[in-house]
Length: 143
Image 1 (tube, rainbow, N blue to C red):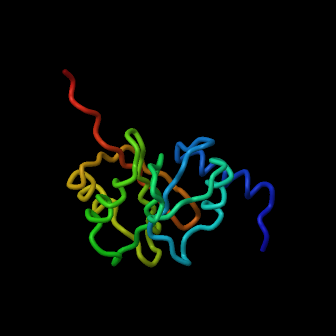
Image 2 (cartoon, rainbow, N blue to C red):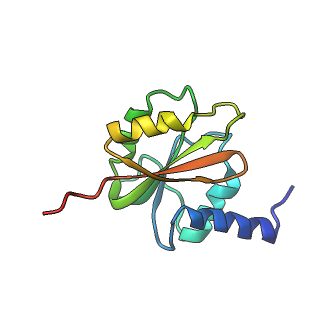
């Protein structure tokens, strides 16, 4: 089944809900065959840049971390996701929605984020099968 113009527009709305903008570089970690290709394409269309992987040797504006139950230690994955992230950038943890294979409880993300030095700011329905949780570094203390 091919995507229609309406599907593409809907996907770009989802990509925009991630807070992404034209010209930004987005790193993708944890891609597999089950990832939402429409969301991936819409992110590339919105930013105007291809998604980069962990071999990218420059800073990135955002990280998409596709994460499933059984993928390993989420704290370690979050720490790794911060390696190339520019200050003020966000890590989006994308997990299968409830009832789908690989679903991750939101509390697992909420528990892992502060250990990795991140704060959870929002959660969205990122795609038909995927939820998204936005994590950012805490703002520095006042002087």
